[in-house]
Length: 438
Image 1: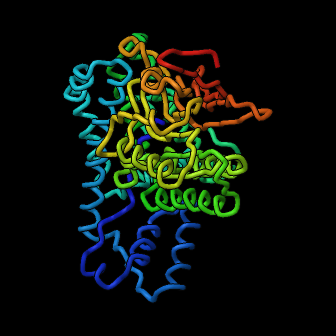
Image 2: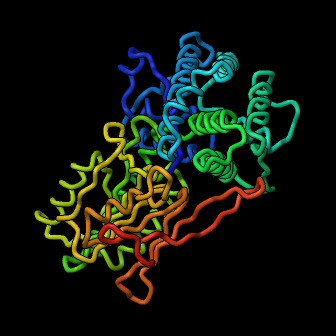
C-alpha cells in the first residue's frame, strides 16, 4: 500500500485546557475538526461515550488565533518535509538512485515550488486540501476557495497534466474522497514507472508530480482517531467471533496490521473502505478458523505474539495476513521499523500461507530482480507466500470447494490514456525462494 497519509487535524491544545477535560473530551474536540460523513459518525459515538461515562467540558479551539495559525503553518511545513523524504524513499524502492532524487530536491525549480507552497499555505488549516479539491471538482465553480486555492490549483493542473477529476452525480463525499486518493495513487504509479523504466521525457517534471501527489495525500482529513477507531473495530469483531465460534481443533488465521497510527499513513488498512473489507474477511474466515487481529509493533514483537498463540494457547497457525506499506524491497511495519525482517518460520504450520497485503512486494525491477516476496519465501520454505506486483487497493482470499490452496486476488487501479481502470489481478505465489504457478 502506497498511500502516505499524514495526521493533519490533531491540533495541539493548551495544557491548561487539557487539565480540565478528560480523554473523551479531547478526542471529541479533535474530531470536531473533521467534517466528512464518516468522521461525523465517530464524533457522535465519542460524544455518546462522554455522556454515558463522564461529565466533561468540551475544549473549544479558536481557529482565528495566532497560536492556531502558527501551529497550522508549522504542520504544513512538516508535511512538506515528510513528503520530500517519502519521495526519495519511494523512488529508491523502484530503482531510481537516491542521488538523483536528492539533486532534484535541491534544484532551483523545486526550491521555487516549495516557496510557492509555503506562501500559499500561510494561515491555512491543514487537513483541508483534499476537501477543497473535491469541492472544486464537484461544483466546477469559478468562485471556489479564494486566490490562494486558485494558485494551488494552477500549480497542480500545470505540473500534473492528468490531474483533472470527474465525479458522478449522487456520489457521497466519502466515495469522492476515495476516488481522489485512488486517482492520486494511480498517477504516482504512472510517473514512478516512467522513471524506473527510463520512459519519462522530463524526469524532473515526473519527480515534481510525484512530490505534489504525495503532498496531497498527506493533507487528507483522515486522522489518527479514525485509524484507532477502525483498528479496534476490527480487533473487537474478531474477538466477538471467537467467543461464538472458537474451536481448539480449528486452525488460526492471524491478521497483522501495521503500526503507523502515531505518525500518520493510516489510510492503508485503517481507511473506511479497507476496514469494511477486513470485516468481511473476519466474518467469513471465522467459519473455518479462529481469527485474531493484532497490531504488529515490529517483526520481533509479531514473532513473540505468534509464539504465545502457539505455545500458551495451543493454536495451530496456518494463515497469516500482513497488512502494511510495501515496495519491491520490503514492507514497513512501524516508525521504528520501516524495513521489517520477518521470520515466522517456526510459528506457521507446514503448508501454511502468508498473504502480503502490501503494494509491489512481488514486483521485479532492474535493481530488485528478486522481489521481497521471493526472498521471504526463501526464509519460509514450507510456506506459500502470496503477493502483488502492483499497488494494492483490496485483498481477496477464498478457499473454493474446501481446497487447501487459497484463491488469492488483488484489486489494483491503473491509469490508461488518462483514465482510471480498476482491475482484479491474481496474486504471485512464491515457495522456497522461487515463483510457482498460482
